[in-house]
Image (tube, rainbow, N blue to C red; front, side, top):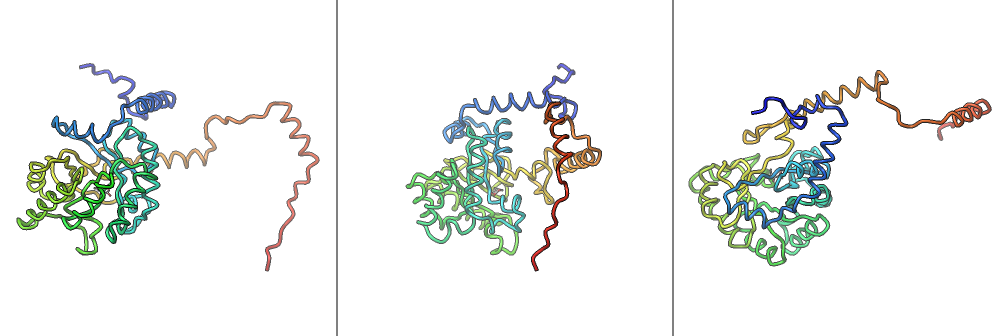
Length: 323
Ligand code: KIV
């Protein structure tokens, strides 16, 4: 094996900004020419036994990078309420906000499958309202799939959404939008009885027409059985490695969160890097070492400017505040 790292493998800090810019440009070129990854591509992967990777994403810039990395699916999760808006849980994430973020993510990653999360109270109260809201994610939000947190009692809604042409991802197991019902976050399917209930939820969702399942926080043997019985792809989030695909919150993976789920081991420490970069900026501001200044006056304009200043009344009249 060649022990000399090539330019691409060098740590970012050791490259010149021109080298980094060149790499970004070529990554972006590759991203824009990438063959779109569709639901059909995902089904092909799953059938051939290849695992697919999904991460949450809430903005176009990050989406562009994740697409360049080759991510298969991006989830615009209702966790955006916590990650972006600093809300205490996902129950407060606004619908219009999530629709707008979804469109931003799809614009940033047009060749990646984008899944939109429907927030609390956008689908629970009334089926017709749920279908209209899901439709907004597909049209205004440019989503490829919508995800709802469900159990088997939502089978009727899933069937109606499917009939309307909306590909539904049924999020089963632990449902963070039910946090108040449980007095906190919880795992699902830990007793034999609740494990069977989870299998029944999965089956009901598939029979109702769900295109995919997402299992959150459940024992791996329960998820394994769901995968064995499932005719649609299964994404795991803290449900073990047997699932066809996996999802975690991007900020957890990047080492930016204050709390870290055990199944989302960070692959980077961006929190610390952001702090270090901000400190460098503060030092630059303090010292005036801002880099080359791009805007210049020619000699004639400079002379004319100086001449005009000589005759200019520089005293700014004081405006008294109104009482
Ligand atoms: O909103 C979200 O981020 C999610 C995943 C963690 C599954 O639903």
